[in-house]
Length: 89
Image (tube, rainbow, N blue to C red; front, side, top):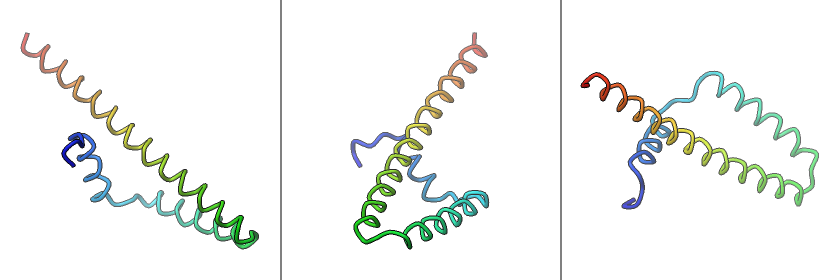
């Protein structure tokens, strides 16, 4: 992890320690049910394609969340810097 940014390290720690919300868990269960229902209609090749597609989407969503966290963190630091700078002048 020598090249990992502090912001990325904070994000990973937050994700590991944070419990999903009730709303998230509800949607997750719904998603699993829908996936199972769809998979029951597919042949093995189609199931594999679906799994590849879902895995790719999960990777994209993880990257997107990390990017949003990083951007939000940087904006928060700029806001704090502005506030402290204006208080001291």
